[in-house]
Image 1 (tube, chains in turn red, green):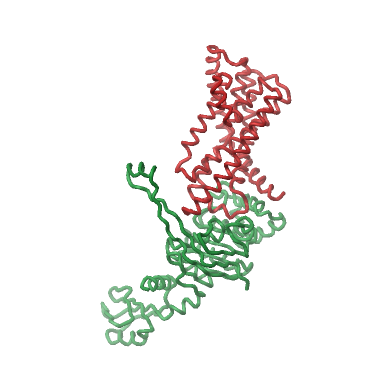
Image 2 (tube, chains in turn cyan, red):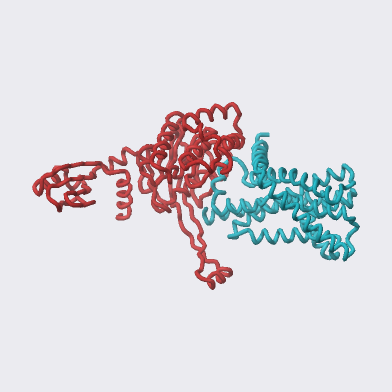
Length: 262
Length: 329
C-alpha cells in the first residue's frame, strides 16, 4: 500500500502543479481551438470532394475534436527524460527508493489527467457550440472518456521509450518527430483510417497509433461490442508490450552508465 | 564500533568511446567504434565505522565521485566487494536507499518548481515515513538548519546556500545512518560554508550520523572530519586520522619574516622559499633537516627582524605535500 502511495503522491504533486500553471492550460486550450477550426475547415472541403466514411458533419467535427483532445493532452515527457539522462541527473535520482520509470510515469499521468479534464471541457463546449452535441449512449460516452485516458497513458509509455533513447542518441527530438508524424498519419488524425486504402489500414492496425487516437474516436460512429473489445485488447496489448520494452531498454541503458560512466 | 562501510579490492573500469575529428571522422565513426578502457578505481580497500566523519579527497578524476556512486548503488564495480550497512549496494539499491542519505553539491535533488515544504512532504511519502514521525523530524531539522523562512519559496528562488541547507534537510528526513556528501560546499560563500560545516558537526554530534564527504575545500575537512582518506588515480595514498595526518606532516613549518634589509637570501638545507618581497621573506622549513633555531640564528646574522611568524602547515599544504611525495615516489 505504501509503495503505491509514493507514486500517488507524485501523481498528485504533478496534477496540482499542472492545475496551478493555468497559463499553460489556457495556451493549450487556445491551441486546441485553433487546430479544431483549421482541421474542420480542411475536412469540410475534402469531405465535399471525396466520399468520406459514413460521417455526418456533426460526427466529422466531433471525430476531429476527440482526436485533438487526446493529442494535445499528452505531456512531452521525452524532453524531460532526455534532460535527466544527458545531464546525468538520473544517476543522482537512483539512490531514492522509488523506480525512476514509475516516478516519470506517475508525474506524466498527473499532468495528462488534468490536461484531459480541462481540455475535455473546452473540447465539448467548443464542439457542441460549433457542430451541436452528439446523441450517443451513456456507455459510449463513458468509453470515449475511459479509452481516451488509456490512449493517453499508452502514448506516455511510448514517449518514455523515445526519452530512453537518449541513452544511445545525442538528441531524441528527431525520433519524436517521426513518432508524431506516424501518429498523425496512422492514428487517423489527418484522415479517418477508413478513408485509407485497405493495405494502409492493415499497416496502421499493426501499430499502436489507432488505439491512441482514431479507433477510440470512431466510437461515435461504431460503438459495437466487437469494436470496443478490439480497442480494449489493442490498448492493453500495446501497453503490455511497451512496458516490456521500457524495462528492457532501461536496464540496457543503466548498463551503459556502468560501462561508460556517468 | 560497528563497521558501516567495508570495501575490499574495489576496481572500476570504464570504456571510453573516442570520437574521430572532423566531418570525415564523424562519417568514419558510424562504421568504426574506437574504445579504450580506463581504470578509475584500482584495488581500493578501506572500512568505516559507525559515527565516523570521513573526508574522501583527491584531485579531479581521482575517483571520488565514482566511489560514492558505487557506495550508493548507482554503479557496480568491475571487481571487488562493497558492503554498506551489511548490504551490497547495487543489488539492494532501493533497500539501502531507506538507510542512507545523499547530497550532491552540483546537482539538486529538490523539485525545482516546488517550495521545499512540498518536496519534504513528497520525500516523506517516497521514504514511507509515518506522518507523525515525519512531522517531528522535520520540526527538529527546520530548527537545526534554520530554514523556517525558506519553506514556502520555490526552490528556484533560493540562493545556493539556502538551497544547500534545504538539500541536506531533504536528505536527512528519513534519518539515514550514513550521509554521503559530494562537494556540499561547492560554489558557496564563506558564511554559507561555515554554516554548513557547523550544521554537519551538530548533525554528527546530535544524531550520530556517519559522514562520508568529498570536497576540494580543505577547510571542510579540517572543520568537519576526523579521518582523511586521500585518493590519487584511483588508489589510496594516505589514510589517517586528521590529528595524525597533521602530526605526520607536522615536522614542516611555515616561517614568515619582516626583515630590515630589503632582500634576504637564505641558503640552508631543508628550507624552501615560498615568497619574497622587499623586506619580506616566507619559507617552508623541514625540521628534520634544519631546526627553527638554526634558521633564526642564520637570519639574525644577516639582518635584524621586525616581525616573525611561525605556523604549522595548512591542510592545503599537507595535501599538496602528500601528492608531491606520491609523485616523487
